[in-house]
Length: 180
Image (tube, rainbow, N blue to C red):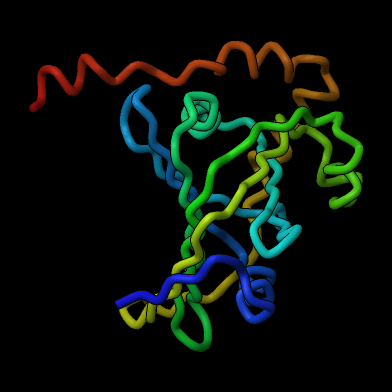
C-alpha cells in the first residue's frame, strides 16, 4: 500500500534527481489515456509542489492536448538500481512557451536547442510505494536521436513546421469503435 503526501520531501527531490528517466501519463475527455517514457536530464524540481520539464517534439502531442483540456497528469519515477522505490506525482500541468526566461535559466543552453516547450507541473499529491517488483536495469547512456533530430530541424528552420504538423495527435476513435 502506498503512502501519500502533500508535497515533495528533500529525500524525494534527491531521488528524482538521480533518475535517468520518468514516465508521464495524462488523460482528459479529449481521448485515450496517454503514457510516455521520457529520458534526458530534463526534469527539474522547483519547489515542494512544483516541477518543470523540457518537452521535445516526438510522435504525438497528447500530453499537451490533455493539459490544454484541463486533464490530469501523473509522473512516475522508478528505481531500476539500488533500493526499490516507485514515486508518483499527481499534477495539473501548464504549458509554457520555450522563450520564457525564468524557465530557461533552469537548464544549460545546449539542452534548450530544439525543444518545443516547457511543461510546468503543479503537484497536489505525492505517492511513494515499494517498487519491489521493478526489475534491476543498468543505465548505459542516452539515445540522442530524438534530440539530434529536433536540433537539426531547428537549425534548418523546419522545427516549427514539424510542430504544427504534429500538433494534433492522431485520432484513435475509429480503432476504438471497431475493436471494442
